[in-house]
Amino acid sequence: MKINNILYITITSLSIILLVVFGQKNRNVENKIKTKGIDTIGTVVNRTQGIGNGGITVFGVWFDFYVDGELIKSDQLLTGKSDYDQAIVGMKYKVKYLIGDPHTKSMIFINEPIKDEYQNIEEERDRIRSSYKNANVFLRKNARPINELKYFLE
Image (tube, rainbow, N blue to C red; front, side, top):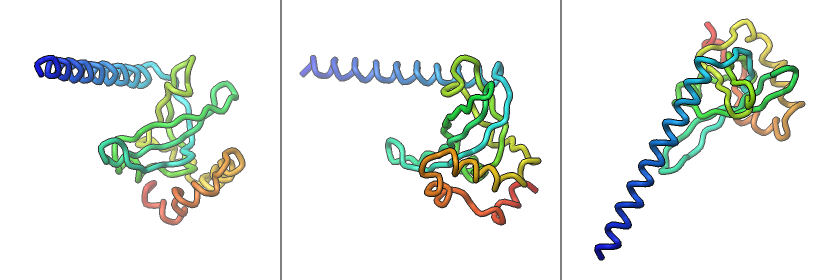
């Protein structure tokens, strides 16, 4: 019985330590992208909402941007429902990425839309339809009509 308790405490302690270490590593990467990342413009391709571990609702966006003429596709978890509500499929936003691995080391800043691009949302949605498999499905499900979006940009 004592050995089981010691084993349980040891495994639990190691799990907590690993979670803290991985969380710190992710925060360090995020801070590095924010401070040393290269600025560019990216487009929200899709926004998602689902149930994560423990029954917690998680929000995310898929976005793409160009680096040296190559289309880079990436995704990011959002901090909450307010960011999810502000993410407009087809809208362009500020993006920062790190050289070497922009697919995984990039961030889109939903709170910094490129407002001059508002009139091009439909054109971007057409580009998304031609670039992504099943785009019609996720656009129908997750992209709000243009007339519902005007208040975001005023």
